[in-house]
Length: 166
Image 1 (cartoon, rainbow, N blue to C red):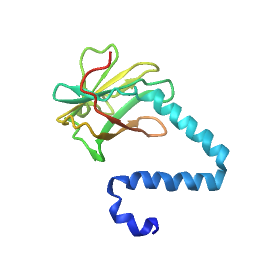
Image 2: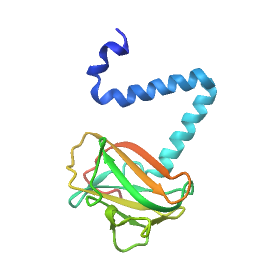
Image 3: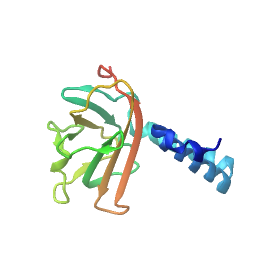
């Protein structure tokens, strides 16, 4: 039985199967050793951007922390967040940079009112109206930069913690 014959039954695994196909394609094109190094770098970047296990229950929803290493910084004119594949309303997602007293709704971010990310400055993200389902969830954050390349995105999968990190 091939992948084609079960394609309709894999539902939530579809993204993982697609990723597996891409990995096989990379190995075929560049070799196993190069692909291993690429996977190592990707894993390092994921651990460097998203604070592991920071997806947690917060008032009126869930929140998480980005560590913002000095990889891609700058002024972002649009920020979008997807929860399990569905983009949230910009009025239901909020960001608060380290050292800022007030969080901003994503609807407040625009080319004339950018959000500036600096190296090493943590960013707290709150998603309003999300229930605390203990299953693993996929979160995608898209940031539109006013420079080039214009779109920067980051995705992680984690399970919601009921309490804040120590």
